[in-house]
Length: 314
Image 1 (cartoon, rainbow, N blue to C red):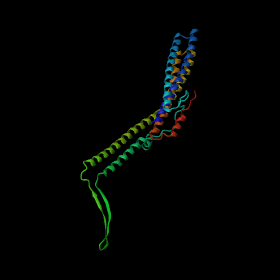
Image 2 (tube, rainbow, N blue to C red):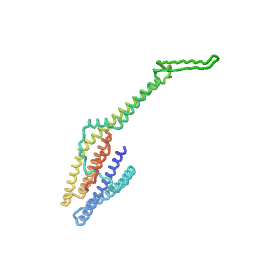
Image 3 (cartoon, rainbow, N blue to C red):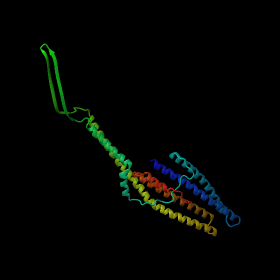
Image 4 (cartoon, rainbow, N blue to C red):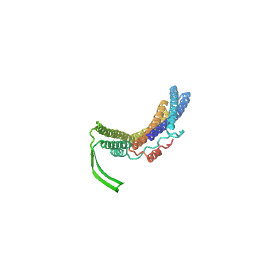
């Protein structure tokens, strides 16, 4: 479905832009740490290894940033080709909050999918068409009984030697006509066999579609149920990473932590933030997929999802 494909590509663009932003922030932090390490090395307060570690981390982040910016440009091109719209630098953003709607039970969603799924409705339509075709073919070469009626009239007039004369006759007939094909060459039985086979095929396709769509619904529902807990866990992990980063900065100033410890803490905090934002976006995409499976992916559902993809505070 084009809508889901567009949503997937949009999220990939937003994630790529977020990776670039976090890498820029990490690179700025590393550059500050490198400058501080060099200054402190000059006065003998830091070993040369701190300078080397900060230099290596800075070079690595520059390479990662170049790769991330290239990936972002490619994903923007894909989104522009898909939508036919120009994609600016701030055109895509990740959701700032996770969806807070209550998730219905799995049986309730399965019932909604059974009622509204478009593929299942199409399969039911194919079954009805096959049954109608079988009914029509069954009567094509079967014995038939017809009611027959006929009315006829004859009149004769003329002139002769002895004068004019006329005569007339009227016939009325009504009856029942039975037509029985003596031999069809096997066509009748072949048509009936084919029609029944088409009905069986349509039923099998409907059952297979119902099974596959039910499995997809269950998988997406379980992903949503687990995803809500995952978002909560990632939010706690981000908070802990930021607290660790603050503690590492304090420890570095006190001499209890090294520059490498600070760089690792910066990296972990950035990765935790990206993981949380990605989990929130994936959760919204799963809700769209669940709505699509139930045949409920309408304008209102898209507007509700789009409202959550807002620029978060930096």
